[in-house]
Image (cartoon, rainbow, N blue to C red; front, side, top):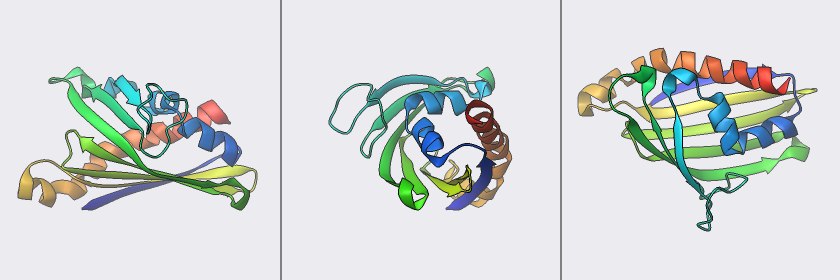
Length: 161
């Protein structure tokens, strides 16, 4: 699988950044408008609808229509891991795609306390669709990810600093 990684420093406490990223409203706020995101439903690990916090086992059903072109793409994501030790200055969660446009997708969100701020570290391991050709072209996914993650980090700063 190919890997995309981007880090940013946010002048906000780790606790605030972690809480923001732990809610569906954070996902909605950090998805660029050009993706035309629509959250169809969120289910908690015990089956409860619309949980306040995205805990391990939560599932998010959504659809996107990038740039308003082509039909909507269905995307089902699940929170696979979630761990925070805020006293030690670190937190992480991992989501994977259960259904959607990528054959493989694993997004690791890491947060580190850094002085009076937080380092946000996004790592996506993915495979583009298209079988062997998609796998060969997967490193080019960076072209699409870079504007999306640049937006995410800029918005995180704008909303939390």
